[in-house]
Amino acid sequence: MMFLSIRQLMARKKQSLLILLGIVIGSSAYVAISGMMLGFQTYMLDQLVNNEAHIRISAREEILTIAEMASYPEASHVFWQIPPSGRKDSTRIEYPLGWFKKLDSDKDVAAYSPQVVAQVIFNKNKITRVGRIIGSQYERQIKVTNIENYMKAGTFKAMGNSGNRIIMGTKLMELLGTRLQETILVSTGHGIPQPFKIVGAFETGIKTIDEGTSFISLADAQKLRGTPSEITDIAVKLFDSNWAEEKSTLWKNNARDKVLSWQESSAAILSVFKTQDIVRNSMTISIILVAGFGIYNILSILVNQKRRDIAILRSMGFSPKDIVQLFFNQGMLLGLIGGAIGLILGFIICTIMSHIEVVPGRMSGPGNYMIISFNIFIYIKAFSIAIFTAIISSIIPAMAGGKLEPMQIIRSGDQ
Amino acid sequence: MIEIKNIIKSFPNTPTPVLKGITLKIEDGDFVSLVGKSGSGKSTLLYIISTLDTPSEGEIFYDSKNLKDFRPEEIYQLRNRNIGFVFQFHYLLTELTAIENILLPARKANEVEKRRDFAMNLLNTVGLEGKAHRYPAELSGGEQQRLAIARALVMEPKYIFADEPTGNLDSANGKIIMDLFKKFNQEKGTTIIYVTHDVDFAEIAKRKINLIDGKLV
Image 1 (tube, rainbow over the protein chains, first blue to last red):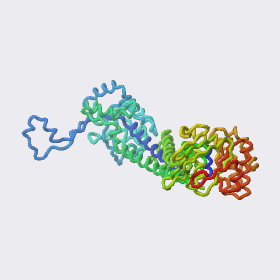
Image 2: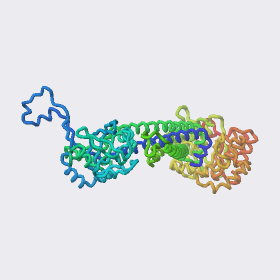
Image 3: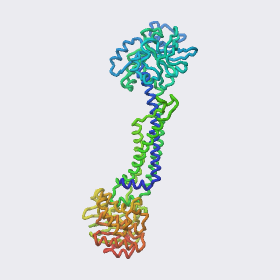
Image 4: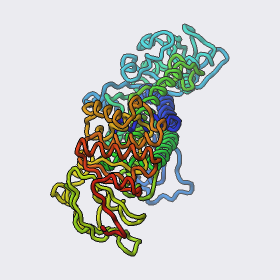
């Protein structure tokens, strides 16, 4: 029946082209929008997952409550006029060796990096900026994060394991009015500010990191805080970032320290991504739905117009199944051709978009070009949506055509 | 041979049956005209004999095999291989050329290439030489009906059923059609059963069956 289906499609070029156009627009829009959104999401996720840590173990934070006080033996005799409040934070991880042992023996852990994270004041001449420093051992840090990929000047290794050398975000350097090889002062707010020589600069594209974060060696950070041999955080990298949530839940049960997976710390962004996905899918489905209604309407009209053809075909020995096939093929052909053209068009749009230069940091990846995803699943999904729509919208009129009996048509006097 | 026994056909909203117990035999190679006034049931009888319609009561036998015992696929095959239809209106597929229309039944049987030369011969026989690649809209009414006859004959069927095949044509074109039927009946032994209002065309048949109010006369 394919021969006849093609001939009928070709006989109605305008109608067929219009439906085809609907499917092409629907599937190419899906590819282009998904490419753009997923490209951005993938880049952001990569930043979230690999710039920080899959799991961060940090010093505990506790909010004081009356219930907390009930553990004291005299608690039953105490009546609070003003109930206790505030936080009972620890400034360090209580038993880091225990964590190191645990992490060393865990087969899912790829690497970990003990850190000292502290809020500091950067000072250059009269300019002061508040930010944070991450003190780490560079050889461990580069195994946990991909910070090396974002180095704009110098190497991450240059910070060494001591010697007051600092690696700063490019934006922070701009804000401080400083440059490579110059010296700035860093202070935790307690004690005398210490001089650090800038030996490297990085740029992740995330404003908050580039404007407020710097890396120094673990020993220098401990010295700066005046707490030698203490650490505040352990950044952990797993072999698979998707295990982070499950793993952190497991570790939380046996620890007093704070354990946070990247999914928990990026919950707000992940929910934005979910909203983006809903918008993207519903927009595309709306376009494809319109094309689907187009197929349905035109095939329904066609079945009605072709009643006498159905009668003559049935009188020649064509079965009801053949008649269903005749109309179904037309919907499927439109879906297949429209879907395929849509994928090609979508790919071309994505390729063009990936060469568009945008404002650094705004939907741009390294090189300041728009980040576009060319993930094969986008194309598979777009094609499947086009085919699924074509199947659903053509099967109903096709089956209606198959149900027509030749005598029904002949008696109704169709000419 | 087709044998029909005590055929009754009623329609839901009509008080009396259209066909009232018709019994007849049509031998192979027969040339039969079905005549009668409008509403006498001749077209209904033709469609029942030709498997396109079903009787309310009674039985039809094709070469001694009851149609009731045929599976749907067997009925489709019977129509494809052994029966050719010609209707009052040509019922050609407008998207297909003359030769493609003729070969439609062969397409169902997967015999397009096998029957292509025969189809071209048929086209010549019905006087449409040189018009194989014309679309139906480019042919006259008489040519369209001759094309429909060629299509009915392409599978070399045993039976041709025609419902007022000349009803929509002028007398000259009508005569050409009837001459073609006569020719195929004589040369190929095709059994031809046709309904007509035209007294002269009815007389061409070897056997004339007259229906009055759903009964054979």
